[in-house]
Length: 95
Image 1 (cartoon, helix red, strand yellow):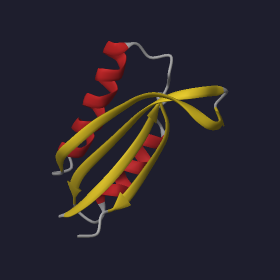
Image 2 (cartoon, rainbow, N blue to C red):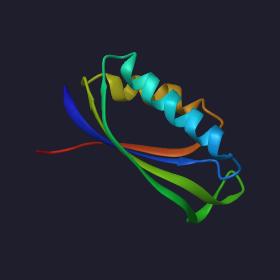
Image 3 (spheres, rainbow, N blue to C red):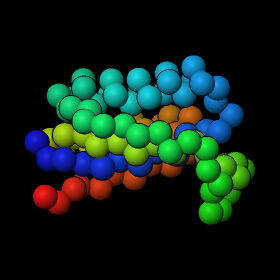
Image 4 (tube, one colour):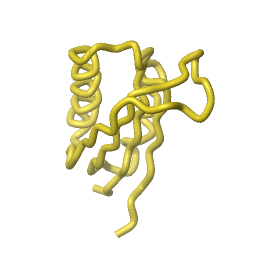
């Protein structure tokens, strides 16, 4: 298992319960692939550097997960299909 840092930008039109639901979906998609969620920090609503899907701002999250080497590619495919995730970035953390 490797440690990964994952940044998400969610749709700013989501209300509090919808945001929590998206976070739970993200955690569930990690755990059903035998991954572990270490930490998830909410950065809140922030201005985007450029419009994404006509949105000028987004809700930012930074998470740390333990995943197997193949899992980030599987998760990327799943997250690309989500209408509420505007962008995400997965980085392998060095020790």
